[in-house]
Length: 231
Image 1 (cartoon, rainbow, N blue to C red):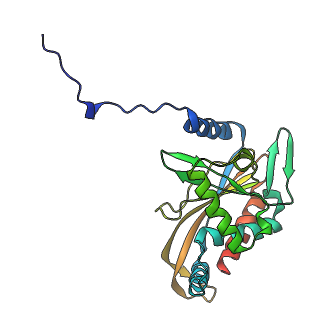
Image 2 (cartoon, rainbow, N blue to C red):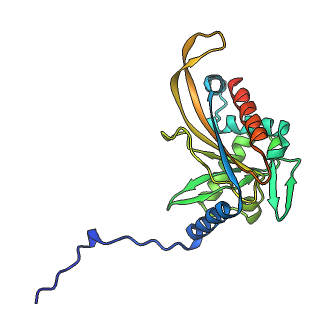
Image 3 (spheres, rainbow, N blue to C red):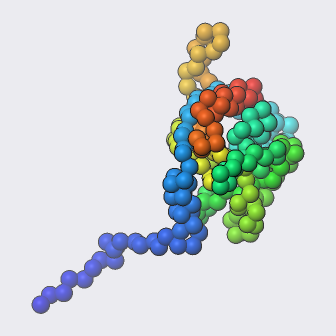
């Protein structure tokens, strides 16, 4: 009898859903099970935002596009407080402070979203430094439980990919999450009616319809686009 040997290169690679990966899986499933999720998509002209980034770089100030968007998000949440909070039990708890969670992809297919507490009390540069410090501690596994669980609004950034719009899953018990898609040079109709090449960014806002209706969510996303378009 001839015994066939299995080629190890053909073997199925089994990854148990446990540990951090298992926790992520459980949280994502729970979010879809419990929240009435809806996503709005929008395109916005980010040309002025990139010009601001370049101008700051010329002045020796290095910030990322995500830092500038976070700056805009914090400002706009101040005008739309219904998106800044959490659904806990049968209560919608709106927070006067923005505890901004930032989704971060780590090695080994791991995703975390630690929060910068009271992000509205930071300058652009201080918030940028806080984001980088969170990233360093996330990579070394030194995030605290409050940082991992205490956010009131989340940003998920896929801007370096070719994904223009997507459907981010709400980071329960938070009310909403903003997805940042790619920015690409596209023809754009200006207010003057002229068509010009502009840096167009895709944005996606997922929210819990139990706490927020579609119209105020659309108002927030439209206001955010205007804020970004101002640079």
